[in-house]
Image (cartoon, rainbow, N blue to C red; front, side):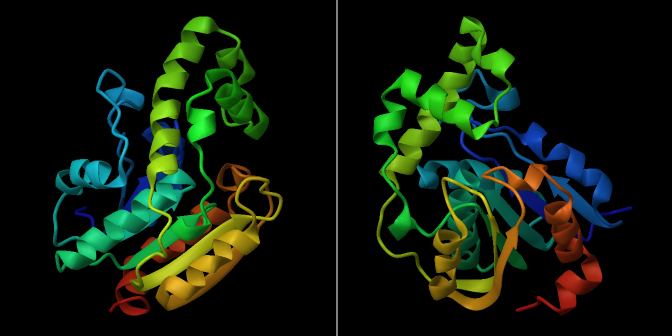
Amino acid sequence: MNPTTRLVCLPYAGGSADAYRPWSAGLPDGCDLLTPDLPGHGRRLPETPLETPAAIVADLLPRLGDPALPLVLFGHSMGALLAYELCQTLCAHGTPPRALVLSALGPPEVLRAERELADDADALLAHVARLGATPPEVLASPAMRALVLRPLQADFRLLAAAPRTPARTVSVPLYALAGDRDPVHPPHEVAQWERHAARWQGLRVLPGDHFFPWQGDAVPRLLADLAHPAKCLTAHSP
């Protein structure tokens, strides 16, 4: 069956496409899941990581497939910043996505500087260990630590260099998600996307910490609902 909707999921700092692939089983018929690896991450590990949102968006644009296929954009943590920038670029090109879902990150003006972590390998790896996204056995291996560190440092430099100016208004339906126990980007911070949304769809606060989308099935169910062709093309059409 040819897809009628494409769900594009962008990764958190240091993450890869593999985190999202299990979600494909819960998507409705007619929805295609696209989980691109960034340069220097996952299957593109040998490539040089990119350290600006603009460079990553330029890399993503030709990889989105059929420009006539409606898109739903999802980004978690750093991926939310990339999804926001990709959405703005698509809107400027006259091909807006059907919806934008931003998870576990507030708008640019509330981001904290991450340069100190990016420049201190031990502090960065300790930060990642506290969040629990990387298995302890990986961080215990010097060879694996080195592999993890390269994309992580690039991503934290990207976050540190991102402009802190207020976000431009998002013209498409914007959904925000937050974990109720997120120690990094708590719900009140994520909720500030509302002031940049022309079509605010609300903040969903879900149980879990910074990686709440992988601690239950609420997020995949929400995305399956948004990606359903009938709902996506009627309830959320511009």
